[in-house]
Length: 191
Ligand code: AMP
Image (cartoon, rainbow, N blue to C red; front, top):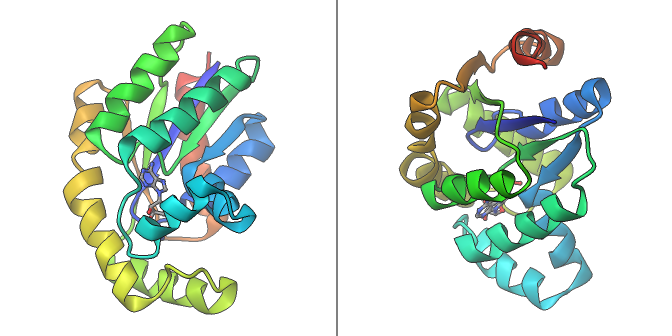
């Protein structure tokens, strides 16, 4: 299996690059944000609970997202590999992900961290809000999400750097330029 974590702040291009990775490497894309938005759309209890956090720009509790991921990894045990997009977002999730993969004799091969400066992130998210109408892409919620990213999610970079699997990717440029840098990193590790 080839297991990739696509990492970065909100607006860094994780979803866009994940779509290209799926096309090129035929991996199973697991985006916790997409899964939670589907739950909200379907009006499930989980969706209602998740929405109460997401609409404020807060993280959904670890236990909920870890359970979702655990069952999806089990369900797709025959996949060629996974792209984890928007997960992990806390150290607890990072530790849980390693344990979940270990159960299947697997590990994370690489963590690709898309590096984009704050000004560009805000700009992209405000634009996305206008186009997609995503409810959490408004200035107030964006600020909260960026704060949450710096305090709760960014410490994961050290966690993965210490394991020697963190790769920083310049996240500014054309979609194809950025994808080229990603491909180079993956080709280095592909088994
Ligand atoms: P995203 O689409 O990845 O930007 O996620 C949108 C929102 O979903 C986030 O701001 C969080 O509220 C929630 N969310 C997505 N993934 C996670 C996660 N791994 N842990 C906690 N909350 C999450």
